[in-house]
Amino acid sequence: MKYVICGGSGFIGRELTEYWLQGGHQIIVVGRKQPESQTAAHPGLSFLTWDSLASNPELAEGADALVNLAGSSLSQRWTPSGKKAIMQSRLETVSAVAKLLNALKNRPSVVIQSSAVAIYGTSLQGTYDEASPAHVMDFPSEVVKAWEAAVDEAYKNARVVKLRTGVVLGNESGAFPKMKLPYMLGFGGKIGSGKQWLSWIDLTDIVRLIDFCVQTPGIEGPVNATAPNPVTNETFGRMIGKVYHRPHWFPIPSFLLKAAVGELSEILLEGQRVLPAKALQHGFSFTYPTLQPSLEHLKSE
Image (cartoon, rainbow, N blue to C red; front, top):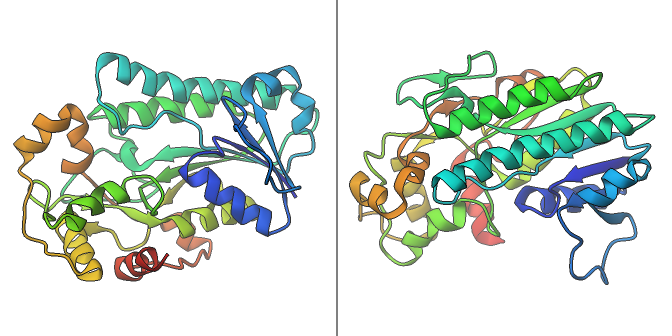
């Protein structure tokens, strides 16, 4: 099979690329620039820039699926310019993918588009699945609502999966190394009230879920990329302490976090309990459905 991964040099994209290469597939990774070194590149792997693909869309002809993971990280200060960059990066990559699809004679049969669980808004009490409505109440939910609206408008005549991702747990990048760091320094503890929900997924499982969505024709529309057992921030922290044999004792007050990172603190102080109903209904089996085995696996890597 031939797969195009936009944003393939990122946290999830690198793991997905490796997973598909091991499966014997041909992969085209699309990014803003060529990697500095390709000397050890896999024979089934090629790199293209957005500009080169726009000039030569025929390079993507015959692709069986396109995965768009591109977009500027939310983990930056939400200044006016930062917010603008976050929003524009998502809308611009959706537009670039749409232009590519329109230029192809033979389009991929499925497009997997990155999205986020932030679209549901935040709540201490609510539980959300793919049937839950969008609730714009803060900057992250505003971004995701606009993002998905652009996808609905841009991607025509293809099966589209909007992968609503929670917190992805991996060692190399993403949120987990930052969440683990205070424990490694001996100062781990709950953040804010500790009651806010954390909807998480192991990096292994999100890669397998993307592949499952590609291979399962009946799946389309929103798909929650979260493990079936979300936890509170307090439970998450205590489990890090248990697995890594570190104390869980030093709470971080809300006001201190807000002073340190500003509006970005909303990501850690607010949350939502999200369930992967659609994945489970279609028979997807999580390798790490509960938190402790996931953390133990990350510790062993």
